[in-house]
Length: 204
Image (cartoon, rainbow, N blue to C red; front, side, top):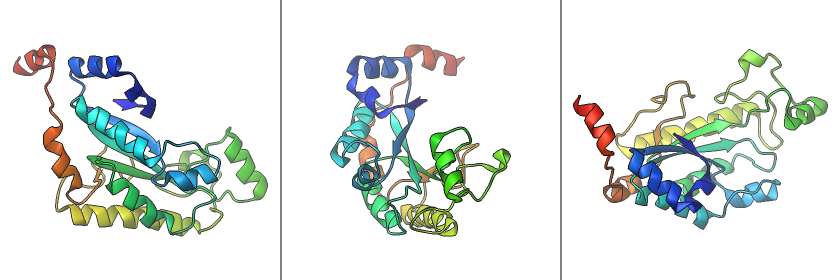
């Protein structure tokens, strides 16, 4: 299931999720470099709090896939290496990296159109895997290739795990193992115990 980061502040809800048999969550962390995002006007949690979010899910038997967005105006090509370093420390099982997508009807879309930075205008061509606007400090091609290059590197260094593209409906950068071994070391403490109702359904 998809869950916000602040859901981990409600322990009773986490316990209810665990009892129901929930064992996998997708969480939008937004950025792998919180400091840069704050400078750009966003308000993500500090690094330490992001790690605590992942740990809270793990403590309640849930694996975590993190979602990250690239393409903020205060980011240049160095963001990919910076974010990779932060993401590897979070303890995620898998991650999904996407390009920022300014959907029509949103303030950011209107701003980019006014600035003449939109590269694509057909709504059916808007997708997370491709850049549809010109970033402020890198090219659209660098935005796309940077995210994919980071994904390929982490996938190769992991030595296995779920292959890129294994999350149906999401771009090729999704489903990638988030770190080279660190998540494997954390996995044993994620104690997945389905509820009796789930176990009975599987037995039937």
